[in-house]
Amino acid sequence: MAKVVRIANGQGFWGDSVDAPVHLIEYGKFDYLTLDYLAEVTLSIMHKQKRKDLNLGYATDFITLMNRILPNLKKKGIKVIANAGGVNPEACREALLKVAKNLGIKDLKVATVTGDDILDRLPEFKSHGLDLKNMDTQKSLFDEPLEMVAANVYLPTQAIVDALDLGADIVLTGRCTDPGLTLAALIHEFKWSSEDWDRLASGTVAGHILECGAQATGGNFSKWWEVPDLWKIGYPIAEVSEDGSFVITKPEGSGGLVTIDTISEQLVYEMGDPHQYITPDCVADFTSIQLTEISTHRVRISGVKGRPKTPFLKVSGAYLKGYKATGQLTISGPRAMDKAKLCSDIVWKRLDRAGIQFESRNVEYLGGSTVHEGIAPIPSSPSEIVMRLSVKDRDRKKVERFTRECAPLITAGPPGVTGFAGGRPKPEEIVAYWPALIPRDLIHWNVTMVST
Image 1 (spheres, helix red, strand yellow):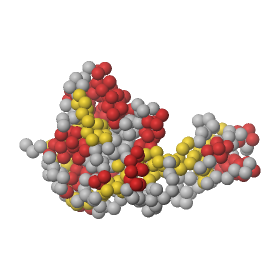
Image 2 (cartoon, helix red, strand yellow; image 1 turned 45 degrees about the horizontal axis):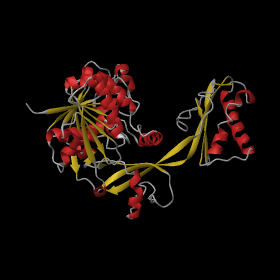
Image 3 (cartoon, one colour; image 1 turned 60 degrees about the vertical axis):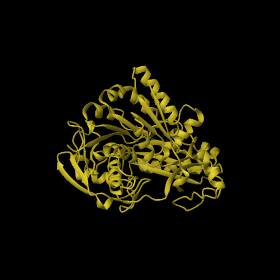
Image 4 (cartoon, one colour; image 1 turned 180 degrees about the vertical axis):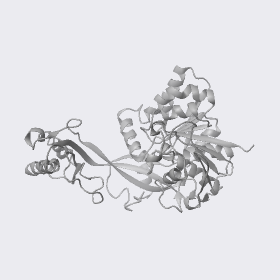
């Protein structure tokens, strides 16, 4: 019988369902569990945490989850690949080993992959004449002084493969590609060549479908009314054959929906140019994908074509760009919209009188077609409006002054102003994104294995 590798994904982002991986393990049948915690802004948050505490900087929810599922993982022989390491894979590993010790788990091999964090290497790259140009603006990273808070390279998937080849039961990484969590298991199991572009592309597509969790099984689906039992939605499982073709399904008895439509909607997520979905491992041609619904909740994907990888790796950078604050009030009663507009006018005029101007300011009237402004009709006379005021500026003191102007509206504004949600708003740092490319030969990774 031909070999099939089964891979499930139980996390689409940091903050996804805490029970999804538990239910997958209980009701699903698979060999690998992938857990995707990272996004561009997530790494910035983790860097901030690590600056305050050297023992932080990883997805702490992962440790809580492992405390629940580690015995079952070991019992069923399921391997885990997770980018929960964030900017501190070693600290994540140590926390995991403590959990294993407390649970009495023996013979557990945990590997960490590092090398993606290049924040401290930026001066080195500058001295070598690298520009690290912003992919959107083409400005050099070093044209003007920026307070960088994060700089991470999307590592090639071979880094994770190396960890699996050493016999790891759990692999903890920092910034890798989201599809790479799945692709790594396939390269390891099938021993695919690093130049087998079609198979690498197919594995990448499998990982792309899995990476957002329930978005492939009916979550966030445009025909949401057709999705049964969303409350117990099953997370996706890929059943992959050696030739690269695979079937997407979900645990038997779970809610949700797996159809050509649900898979297609996930495929176009962050796709970009469908002819060239670029990763560190290959370039996948999404126009070559063939979808076939072979039975209920089972869609086969085949025919994926790939091309050689590029000589560059992508850098996900982030820098501080000032401060922001948002205040929110609920305004109810007759002429709610008129009162909300008066409230915003009062705030801006009071700040103008104090001589305070902002680089950017914004007002939203939720309940008055703000989300679909210019598309949906404005309600003629809503009985309640949520007014949301926001400002941005490099001067923290100016933003702080704004935060003191919302609450006075309750007694110094029109009637019906209530619901001062969350108390007085606080200034927050603005973290801006800096995407760039770097020659791949400048980046090296390291794999460290520790056993219980």
